[in-house]
Length: 83
Image 1 (spheres, one colour):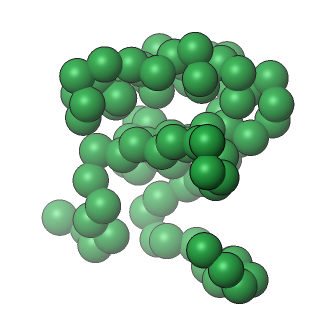
Image 2: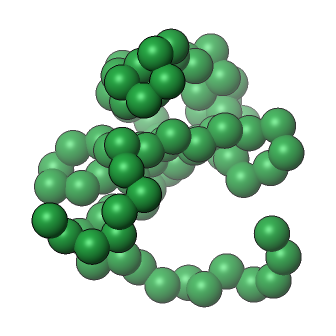
């Protein structure tokens, strides 16, 4: 990826810095999508300050350990419109 970020919010989605309280929900999403969790990597990203989560309808629906070659992201869906 190259270029500046678009700096635009997606209606209905809240992106924020992840906290220790999000670890369980991050693991749950990853297990549902991939069949395994990556809790250790998320915990490391929390310590580095690079972990982010996305919430929709009051619950965590995705996370990322960062936007880099050795990072990962997972979400329930890539759908951007409301059901």
